Image (tube, rainbow, N blue to C red):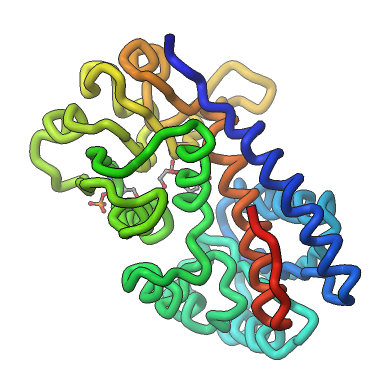
Length: 297
Ligand code: NDP
């Protein structure tokens, strides 16, 4: 029997646990606040930001919403970040990517105070992760770690294969898998667009994380029996639906499920976990900034 991993359910459990921590912080006079900054040419970004704000509001986290016009200069965005960095009422800052072409995203990430960098993308936080003492783990790979733990998948000694080496998914995922820590200790292979004979690598996987951004790219013929498949991909493909598209993952679900012991669906797998871990980092940031011990799931 193939287990379908229910990301919605695991994320709901995490949110429920975070709720009591948010309540305790609020009782101590420190209700968490997340500031989102939207200046993105990608139409999906607006939806992502509004979902993140709704998640915050459901938990009683203050959501501050800043929007900039796409033709504003980089300095306008930097000024907003500087103000948020200096504002003691703001615990977490998230600038939704992508930003317009005339702005260097790297400069944006480096501008955010690492203590408020709840995405975990600032070089200081990346460095802490690589060095083995992460402060804010990037939300998607952290969510995948939690999903594996909730599914009783022990990563220790397993062959983990990550397809994709992006800053936000592939690289931090690989870094978490190789940590000498719970959810790590996996022997890890990272594949990318220049990988030779990808299928030979993916067939070695006990745990496969697909994050290439190519619809239904990994199919059952590229997998070995019993693999745990984590599909990160969220791809819009044309479809005869009300919106004119549907969301599919990077994995061909039917053929992969026939080989897998467990697999995440799209939607309803990794996506809800990414959102839950943003709340986690915001709550953690609030505790750290106020010298308060907080219970985290
Ligand atoms: P990027 O486009 O930044 O990275 C894609 C990676 O896949 C690159 O490293 C690229 O290699 C690699 N790749 C491309 N083609 C191939 C190939 N033929 N064989 C092997 N590797 C290949 O994407 P992201 O990491 O940002 O996102 C990946 C997917 O995950 C997207 O669908 C995105 O929408 C989704 N996503 C989902 C999230 C969630 O919460 N569920 C969160 C974030 C992303 P190279 O480096 O050589 O170019």
